[in-house]
Length: 112
Length: 109
Image (cartoon, rainbow over all chains, first blue to last red; front, side, top):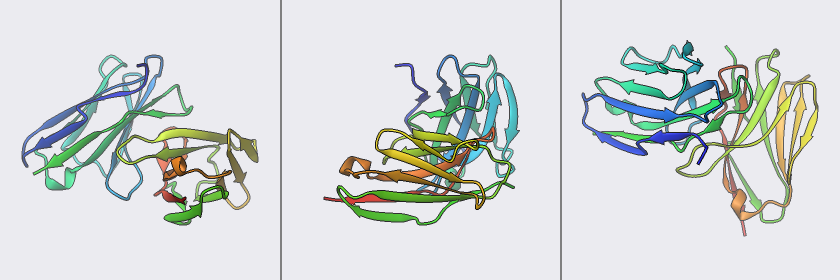
């Protein structure tokens, strides 16, 4: 399978715990995006990378969120001290420059 | 900042009819748009795209129209099928890919 892969598909965590999600983009894609989506809403932009450089981070993103793409390939999104409001679907996508982006199946986070 | 919005949150059509989903954008400098389909529990799936040097682009059963004067685009689905039931998003691919809120399409058999 050469599509975008996200791991895990589901995560249940207790409030206050840290969680980390992984995204493996399509191999030749240099751009990688992270989004958050809640029920009934469109994907909300969080951040994106061009190779290993983080080009933009949403102002909506608190300091508890951090993303990395150390070698310009896979990326991780970490949420520290999770809150119930962090419960959502976290989507990753990749593209070749500013061309069409392809999405993974997402990681569904539930904070209890 | 830039924003993308759809006109109707829900659309219900009869199987076999044509569907039209509308979207408006605010940034007059936007030059590349993408339509996505999202089924329940899955990530958005690319349907069709259009650049600002075009007014119309056709795919298999889908057509996208772009009106730069009024900053509006639409997705037309011909002969809508039950498998077309999903949420449809337009997105502005200006580098960071901004999505609208989506229109949920329901197809009645």
